[in-house]
Image 1 (cartoon, rainbow, N blue to C red):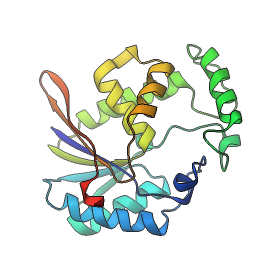
Image 2 (cartoon, helix red, strand yellow):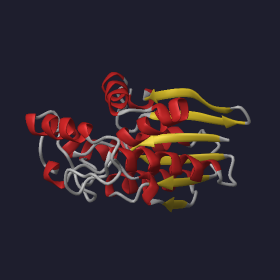
Image 3 (cartoon, rainbow, N blue to C red):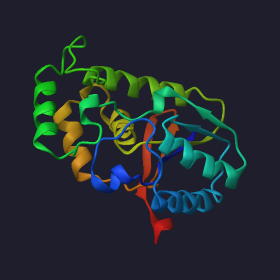
Length: 206
């Protein structure tokens, strides 16, 4: 089974490094990026598209659909990691964000604890496992998934580390391995497990 993960195109909040809600649309640059990745994936053997229903991902998926003429199925399993809503419109590298991460990390092993209305680490980890099980069970051999930068990284880590993932590992990976908007990550599932064939391929952006 081949799964091609595509991060959505750029939004204004991406450009400014701000937390964003479900309805943040693609910027003018993001719309162009979506057209570029759509042209790129026309050369891939895509059977079906699965996508996050968040607006920035759904816009990207619809642009790809227009190019490859394949069905889109939306799944809440593929949405971005939900941060506390107090972070919407706030800088992701601010002292507030650092304070929230620090407090959340103190309770990383408590499934019942929440800072406010976020998806806590154990919920996030469980959803990543569930998403991989869902994708692995699809009947199609070649699946394109349009999702989000942090969640695609979480999926890749889950493929490689499984239950060994801790917040410190996730943060270190996310900070060192950047995933550009519309970056393409190709993973293969065989009888022996997952392999990562390409990560953050963005040659279509020039």
